[in-house]
Image 1 (tube, rainbow, N blue to C red):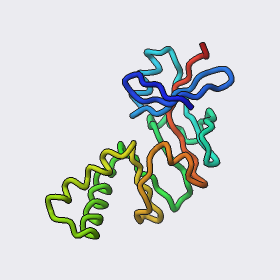
Image 2: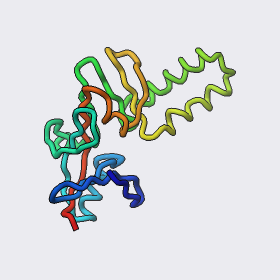
Image 3: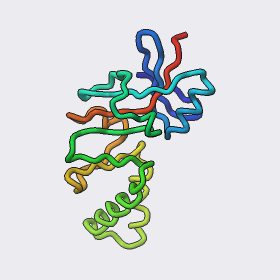
Image 4: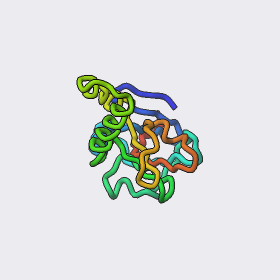
Length: 157
């Protein structure tokens, strides 16, 4: 994997006959990149806890116009920072953290800096209860998680 800094941080994977870019901030970002680079939108799957992408259509990201999805079984739910409801969970987590730390009120507002500035944060729920916060990149390495991302393929040059 290699990253490409073209006004955004993209991950580059060289496959046998094409290059795949992932890491788009949303579906529209990937769609625009495909148009400007003469590429094609694809769904990319990361399975078995590794960073080896496979072109897929299992999650239906293109049809649903999604850029990221994780399937780790029915008991797990992954809430991406761009998902509806993320802010609510993040605010609740900060309140719990502040209460546990018994921090003064002015510091509670500063505490939200952590989740907002983590690298592409993902809140992980297990059986609808908070389990952890991870990143989009690290979610690929979670055991029994299948991670799907929107990608753009371009012919190898």
